[in-house]
Structures are given as structure tokens and as C-alpha cells.
Image 1 (cartoon, helix red, strand yellow):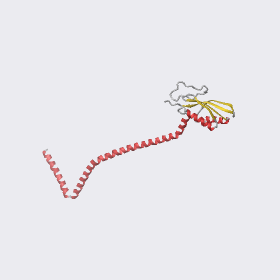
Image 2 (cartoon, helix red, strand yellow):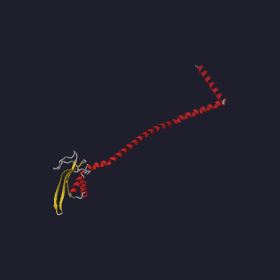
Image 3 (cartoon, helix red, strand yellow):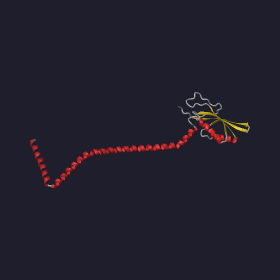
Image 4 (cartoon, one colour):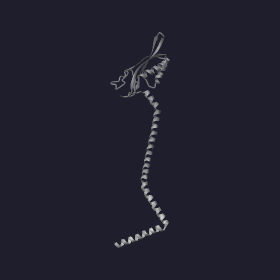
Length: 220
């Protein structure tokens, strides 16, 4: 063993000495060797220096891709919300008409205003406008329907019973009835009575309408 390692030592020693001799005696090899060593050193340091930066860049790219996907989803949701908002705006007029036709409250003041407007429109005199008692808030213990009501309203509908009396010409009274039929908020007519009464100015016609205006009450 001792002779072997001595032989190996002498052999490697001669090998390195030969390399050094070539290195110093041949300038080209010296330049190439220095260049190779310099490049190797630069590459080694570059790998250790650039690797963290490269990893950071990769992570940032992944994060950017994730955020871009999130932005695409958010933009799609915004477009969906805009479409939904447009649909609501398009249907808003219809919803308002539905609310006007079947309100959630009795809105007795609307009935009064409507009858006054129809009387003025058809040159009639509003003699009487009365409404029955109605529960505006809470549940009704026992509903009191009109005795003269011939037809029930749809299930779940509340009603505002009313009595309306108008005086005027027959033609104007007829136009008034046509207007009642075309009201946005329907009036369920239970009975119509036309009487003729003598006055100092002559005979006048009096129309009495008994009816019910439906509404769907919102529970509070």
C-alpha cells in the first residue's frame, strides 16, 4: 500500500507539473485557461445570484396570472350586473303599473283623487263618496264582506268597499262608467243604480255605484 500511494503521488505530481509548464510556456493555453476559469466563476456566481431572482419572477408571474383570472371573473360579474340592472330598468315601468293596479295598501286617498278627477273630466257633480271601515295594519279578526257583493275577489286579496254617487247628463254618466272600466286600479262594481230626481232646474240623473277596490296587504 505504501509503495502504491507513493507511485500515485509521483504520477499526479508529474501531471500537474507538466500542466503548469505548459501553462507558463504557451500563452494561448494560458489565455484560454484563464478565460475558462473566469467564465466558470461568473457562471457559478451568476447561478447563485440569479436563482432567487428567477424564482421570484416565476412566483410573480403565477400571481399575475391568478390576478388576471380574478379580474376576468370580476369583469364578467360586472357585465352580468349591468345586464341585470338593465333588465330591472326595462321592467321597472311594468312593475310600477302592477303596483299601481294592485297596491300593497288600501290607498283610500287614491280612490278619492281618482273619482274627483273623473267627475271633473266628465262634467259631473260628485254628490257622495264613502268607504267602509278597513284594517290598515295587522290581521283582520273577522272579515266583513258587502252584503250586496255578488262575486268574491281572488284568494289573498283584501278589499276597499266604497259607495260613489254622481249627478249629470246620461251621456256623461255613461262616459264615467266607461272610464271606471278602464282604470289602472280596477274597481269591482257590485251594483249600479240610476235615479231621476226633480229639482228647481228640472230633472237630474243620479248614478250610485257600489263597488270594491282590491289590494294585497303587506303584513308588518
